[in-house]
Image (cartoon, rainbow, N blue to C red; front, side):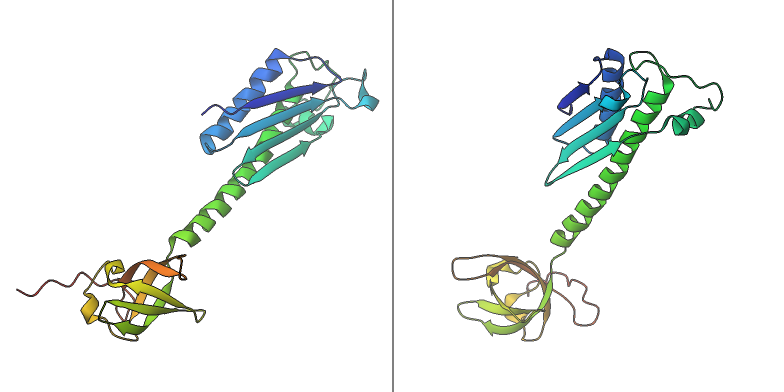
Length: 214
């Protein structure tokens, strides 16, 4: 997808070259994580530096589901002069010109955003993994007729389940104390298990479906 962009210039003229570079850097973020909903970039020359050359600030804010990543980048000329190998005879340049130090600073700012975005994606994956992994419990009560039971969770709660919720094995073979995995859902009369999978008592690996008697 194309990230909705907003580029703002403060105390300086708009630059098509800078616009293009910002959009190119933002596109790299979109390739890395395609759920970015907006990207706002502010390029500014502070009032106290107007007319003195290219002492500038870059602010990048991207919105992602449930969060916002904000980076304020204020490079030093010496740092970027070293980065581009111009440690001697470095001169102030106008921002409208094709100056290397600004593009190095812009790349550094987006690199910081990318690093924070990677941290966000890692946290997102961990949270998703936690939601995907179903909890374990043990059967504490069974009622063969009409066919339901209760699972005790690790925190001591009881979860209702129906025989139709069992995804493997045979409901009639269930016994109190058996370990199961289940997916909990809220219900009108309290939480219930949307599905239940039997586990072996030894290794807690899922058992295969019990074949029907011939």
